[in-house]
Image 1: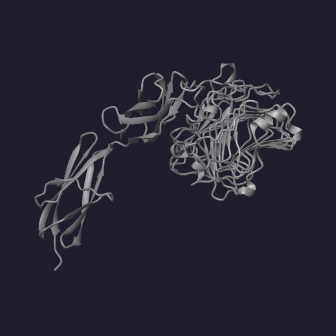
Image 2: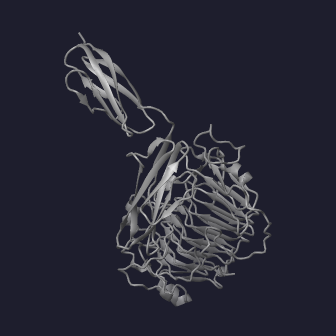
Image 3: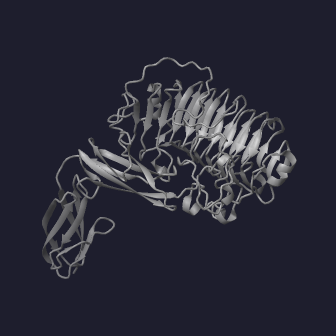
Length: 582
């Protein structure tokens, strides 16, 4: 069965009817279960997962989640350490079970970290389940981070994998089918492995960077669609189709083995003996019904671009002449500017062969790595068939970038104050091509629905204390999409401006003053008058203290004056006796 383009990624990326039972379940009363381990005193694994009292562990929420519910895991300064989710229940096509962190963006630090301190646990283990979505997690130091066995209609989307142990970042085995692995970042990891018995799966729009082995390994797994991936600087083969795996579609990928101008300071993780003999390798038992086309393939200088049924071909031209495959493939030494974009391997305008040249009929998920639709580059001629304008690889070259988010309260300069606190967010985007901006989405980070608007500004009122991460996403008329780095809104307990200070004599008339100042609002100024005629000074050092040298011993009246963002002011006065060493 050949997978086709899917437009329903949020529900499931492959929606073929598989004859699986779909129990008639009423929609749950609460559609979102929250997980947040930031404060152990406010989370409970025996509760119900409300925003006010979330679960502490993802695994605890997994034991309670029902079809149609989302487990929303909030980013925390504490990793979810050794928290392995072993899911035992399924969703339905109409009501999947979703585990949701944060969407992939330049600010990937917003994703909740599922970490292992000894490399012995996985993040998610799914066995015999169906209709499950795993989206938006940072998986660090894991043993086979996502393991999928005998499962169907599973989506693994917009996750980051690094510092991996085991044999694969995502391992698909048993009779698993219609699993979609999409828009993930595999950074210095192991990659994706599909084992015997799996079939009709989709690996698309992922960024594989410096994997320690083949980025994608397939054995005895027919019907694979491998499309729109960017595979940079991998060890061994970039794509290894082995055993009996017929009917594969290998299209629209950007594959580059090395670019010394870009990797001289951070080279691939393998020596010449472990680089592989070809970037795309298809075994004799896998050539039937398999298509290889519309890729860019740049092998190592002493290696081949392709191996087909055991025979190596150094170039796309030689591959096409012998097999009829790769008719639109190109050798492109992709100019991946990692200093600017890292760790994301985005295309540059100089990568002309990869831009507006992909096969639009290849299976995929309908957007690029960051969620942008296909965009027609105004300065590069289209070479894609059927009027297509999609670029090859995981990233679409667009004219929309650098979204800057600014936050302040509705009445003051900073997004900090006591509840209820109304915060105003403003998003500003850079447009290289002048395409009109058409939409803005503001996620205020408190579990509420994003504010979707055509205005670059949005307001939101917080009712509960806490720190909330705010993010803005901008869309233009071409369908391009860009997301800002996050900002923080802080809702505090009611209170008054308070201040105090202590002084320490250091000898010879040297005095250190350590101020303290607290307020529900941001403390904006701290000034000290040391009482020897200089008046108030703004001499606060990076260590949060004032240092002063007196010229004469004696008693001095020292004043600390502070103000906060709400306009409150306070002065604290003390007598300080200054002595000199004799």
